Image (cartoon, rainbow, N blue to C red; front, side, top):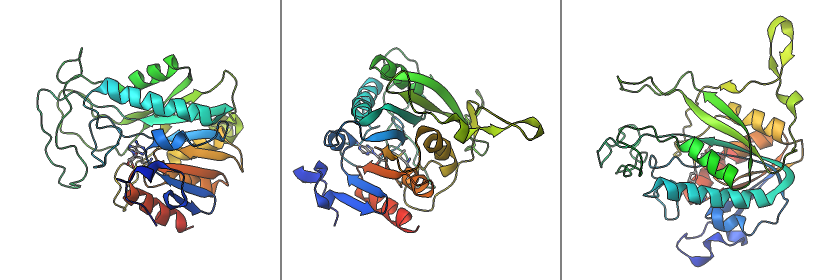
Length: 288
Ligand SMILES: C[S@@+](CC[C@H](N)C(=O)[O-])C[C@H]1O[C@@H](n2cnc3c(N)ncnc32)[C@H](O)[C@@H]1O
């Protein structure tokens, strides 16, 4: 049974807060609090996509991404990933997908999204200090540098190129068709199976994987809306772990990382604040 999140024990590692599925454990609660209960050196890798800053309202107290100030958002992410680093094995890696956003251009409200009313924030976050209206904020790089300052090794800025990206009505800049997927490591030397993710080259040969990854976005029919495609997650799991290893996703959402782990014979721990999303993940993962 899932618990009422307003109760103090919501983040505790009690049986009511844990959904056990074959090879997958979903823990309900705020990633910052739940991770504190997980022993050090547990996971071989972490693959995750935190909420965007100021773009999505998951309508739940404690959510990350709704901070009024981008610096607070970055601080919140750094504190989550500090705990993630502690729970990683010394040769562990973090694969971090993170999206960017623009300052509001002076507007303080956001038009509702007619396709999904739960989707947009009802307000626009204020323009961060030092930026101007219409500026691209550069959230991914701000987060990447903050993580680097906090002790992570920043190893690769992979581009997720989305050929089927959402059209935009802008006329004064190109339509955005990419996001970042950073590879960070806990130590200088780390587990990375480059053979497992080689890509096709000319004359039937293969070559080391490149940093631009072309992957279509995939709509997911469940109530969750920012789902990343399994094809984006697969190379991260294949290079970042071996069969039987434990993988973490502290922003589990609809459980895509769990789905890929099931397919590739890894165990997965997912943390999710919103019990409705945890329920969606449970149903999605239970199908296999
Ligand atoms: C971008 S979505 C993740 C989507 C996921 N990758 C998937 O494929 O479905 C981010 C998730 O983080 C969750 N979240 C937000 N703040 C959180 C927090 N403090 N602790 C744990 N989860 C949180 C949201 O509820 C949302 O489901």
